[in-house]
Each structure stands twice: as C-alpha cells, then as structure tokens.
Length: 381
Image (cartoon, rainbow, N blue to C red; front, side, top):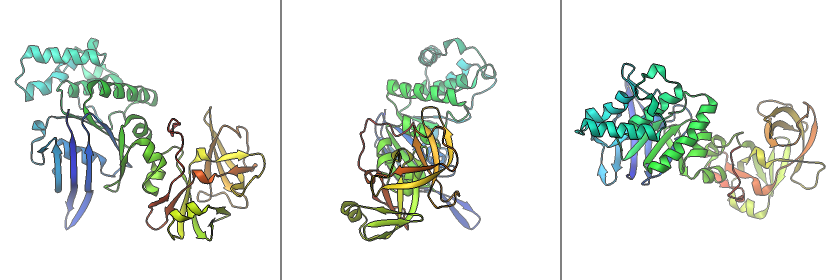
C-alpha cells in the first residue's frame, strides 16, 4: 500500500506553435488504501492524469510522489503501479494463465513456482480458476475483465490504476462488476484510482471523488459532499441523475426573480449571497414535490410537458404556467405521483427554500447550499 500525491501537475501538448493544455495545475493526495474515483466529461483530462501517474505520459511541470519518492522520471515498469485498461489488452495467443503471469516473468526474478502460485491464488480470488487454460477469444466480456484485473492483482502493486474498465460491459454486468470491484478493493486494501465518465459509478464506488472539467480540478470530496455541497455550478450539474435544475435569476430585494416566477428568500439565504445580484437558482428534481393546492409563497403553478416512468419513480418535465415548453424553459421533478399525467396537465409544485442552491452566474461559484439532509438518504436512485 502507498500514498500518492500530485502537486501542481500540468500536461501540455505542442500543436505547431500552439500549446494545448490537457491537465492544468492539478494537486490532490490519495491516502493509503483509499479508493479515489476521477470523473468528468470526455476530454476533461482524467485518462491523461492516469497515464502520467503510470509513467505512460511525461508531465510538463509539477511533481508526482509515491510515498516520499518523487517518480517523475522513474520508468513505468519501476513505479510499482499496475494499470487496468479499458480495452483489457490481453494477448490473444496466450492462455489466461500466461496472460496473468507475463508481467511477473518480464519484470521480476520470481521462480516459476512462485509465479504459478500467485496466478492460481489470484484466479481463486476472482473466481476464474477454471478459465486458466483458455484463450481470450473463448471468454465473455466479464471474464476478460476479470483476467485483466487478475494480471494487475498478481503483481501485488502499491497502487492500482483503472481506466474506465467497465465501459465495454452491458448495463447488468457493469452493475455486478461495480459491486465486485468495491469488494475486491476492500479485501486487498490497495490504494486505487479509478477513472470513469459515469457519475453513477463515481457516486457508488469511491471513498472520495475528484471531478475534472477542461483539465482543471473542480472538487475532490466524498460523494455525498459533492452532491450536497458542490463547489460550483458545473459540479452541481454533473453529479446527480436527473441533473439539477438551474434557473437564471436576479436578486430584487428579498426575491429571486426569474422568467415566469418570483422566489422569496429568507434573510439568512440573502446574507449568503453577499450582494451578488446576477445569480442561478438550483434545485434537484427529487426536492420538488406536488401539492394538492397552493399553501405558501414557494408553491407555483406548473404545466406537465412529458412524463418518463421508471417504475418506482417518474421523471416529470414541467414548465411554469404561462411559459412555452422549450428546452430552455423545461425543468424536471422526480416523483412517485403523476403516473398517468398527460401533456398539458396543470399541477401545483413546491420548491422548499431549505433545498435550494444559489450560484454566482458570472463565475459559477456556489454561494448558498441546501440545508444538510439526512446522510442516510441516498442521493442516487
């Protein structure tokens, strides 16, 4: 096991006279035995970050430390780091046993008996001992993924790196493998960095998650903290499914005034805004509810546009009454009600002040967060 630290790490590529920055001034520390998930949209720099840690990409500036050792210029094979790739990268002409043993044969002076023992123990751990003499083409996608994991585990590295290892699996198998990977990491207690673009994987798997956008770190924290207390509007919109609703508003006295609605706020909420008047109001779909009749100033008339049933819950797309239904005006409510509502149905919705977030429209920075909810309540459904 080991600690890993990235200190102001930057990666830039030259394109003629232009410099393209893939990762900019990235600093974060991964604790011994921690499972850190790096998440973000395509092209945000997460795989580049993993490849720099592995030694497959040189860094432009900054420092990478493994425990107290700077590894910037250490060859990849000497870093005591094992990487699992999205494509599995198995040798098609070798058996599973040979694939799992290959790295040890090339990089260590272990005896054949010791290598064989490690391979068989790892195969037992992954429940694939019966596959050891098969070739990759004879395996399913899930089995190939286990072999790729086994090839990394058998090396007993200080750090595991995993680059979207489940993206080639179907949805059911991906969910199963998420659980297996979590259990495996807990059993091995090895420091692990897992890269994905899937925020559900991030929320369900990581001890902490690091969220990247355009090569810059937006937030690194526990999944629940990122969900409940996002640093900025990007994090708030990226984490959560359905995504948080956003409304451009202006502060006028003690009200947030948007297109088609006015939202009164308390003195405490207003104090958090620190005089900023160009704002974005955020509310998560599950925090909006339906009422039989208006009861207070946080109730609004709305019109149903589309209902998407999901069995236990429905995503209801709405507009405020009097608005034309467009992509810009629609917002989403997650509810167990309105199972048979048709387009055009009029409803009363409640947007509680204790659930709202407010962001600076110019910078995207969070100015006000919702009141902390019960930590046992899951933010992902």
